[in-house]
Image (cartoon, rainbow, N blue to C red):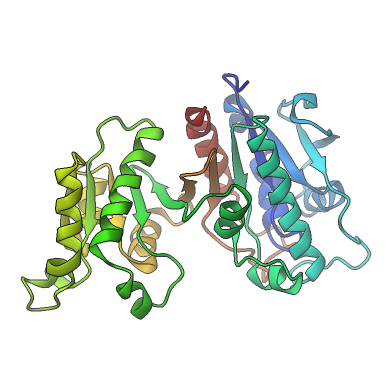
Length: 333
């Protein structure tokens, strides 16, 4: 049973990246413990190295179940997996053992969430090359969560300040993404986005759909996607009772959403939404994976191998990631 101060699984990410550093930095903040019970899924030896690098003094309490933790500021409760050779581990390098370890942290967190032992999962960054070196058959977090939760095409949503952004397409070339912008897909995503927002507590969401072409295509002067695919998908959703708006020119839709005109924006391709969110506040842009049996939040940056182990990385994104998991995670139960 999930209680008021919920258990949040925090995966420490690729052991050779900045994940361990930003995890201990985030958990050095008392406000995290005021709102949740963070349980780290990682490796004790790596966390101790991160504490040394960051000059942070925190006790580590090894546990085997979330219910065994202390969850008080000054102590990190960790479920430690013995899956690394510390003699060969190096900061800032692609290593197969790190890709495998990062995958196992995620797998463990998913199992805890499926069992109802944690309310949500907050993830530190992993490295695609390390996963590949380990022969892990997934390109990233979203694909792993989708497979291990039997979720088809989970929804990615960014939240920063009061701006929420969904993505119709993600990791595709722009040319390939455009071929995915169909009226059927626009309709399907609007249905799913409305359900996701309601799950997060937005009772009557207004969803704006970003246009693809300049000025929304200007009635075919600059392209026909708005006329032939995007608008028909929106109209079908409206007919089914969804409060959808658009297509709204992409150069204004995110600004209007920030002003509170819309509860969310459906971005049509990766960079369209990423640029808007990161310009609003790069460090506080958090990715939420919705549509699964539980919520997953994630920092929106990589493993930063170039600065790993140097006590340079900011933990702001990791802190926001855990806070959003605590804010929204219990709503899924």
